[in-house]
Image (cartoon, rainbow over all chains, first blue to last red; front, side, top):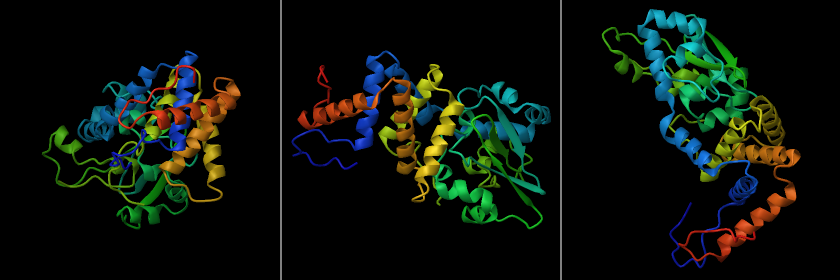
Amino acid sequence: MPHDDHDHPHALLPPDPALRVKALETILTRKGLIDPAALDEIIDTYENKIGPKNGAQVVARAWSDPGFLEALRADATAAVKDMGFYGRQGEHMVAVENTPEVHNMVVCTLCSCYPWPLLGIPPGWYKSDAYRARAVREPRKVLAEFGVTLPDETAVRVWDSTAEVRYLVIPMRPEGTAGLDRDALAALVSRDSMIGTGLAVAP
Amino acid sequence: MNTRPDPVFEEPWHAQVFALTVHLNESGQLNWSDWAARFGATLKRHGLSKELNGGSDYFAAWLETLEAVLAEAGAAPRHETETMAAAWEQAYLSTPHGQPVKLNSTG
């Protein structure tokens, strides 16, 4: 927002939707239905504390700890909760593993359901009509736009998230990473690789 | 469709309306499945006339849905929201640049 006009006679007027949001906040606060401090805390959490680094730790552990991988397959929600990742929009999480045979990709055709405790807030493109409509219809084309080209023999499976079930893609572990510890492995795991629109990168 | 990292929220009001909705859900005033269904329906309706982007279009649909839900519940009737938004607009217009904007206590 431009803010360089110091001769402006009055405070910079926010756009109409911002005024409407402020109106809702004021009304609900005055009625005692919301706590404004709680709103600040929620924003701070998603802007600064929760993001794809959480999911990357889960993936790195799944790659290096067979017992954890089994637990993740059996009950992903419980397995990641043990690592401290739980809460809003993470009540029922499912991990889907990429293999040479199957590449998994996640979308929400309804709105933008997403595993917040593991990946934070979804990126703009995940919420766009372009992605939401095309991920199901032409996944290989969408993947190509993300720079991902899969061998013909790899099937693409698209998972449609809902308000009840959220998916985390476990990308394939890159070649040449045998000696890496878990933190080094986690650094190879991008947000997009856990949505299925990217791959984990070799170091 | 690009893949560069985006800020979590493009505009402050996107963050505010998001947090407001999450807070209403957590305080037991909004069921998330119902919310997702209503919001999805708004997105679908808006998407008939144009291809929605995942930023301002997306949050415009979000705000419209939340206003409708809160009006139906009686928590924030339409006329109250209109009046309050106008009061905020007036507060901005009557506050000298650089001063904190405060709502007139009768607003």
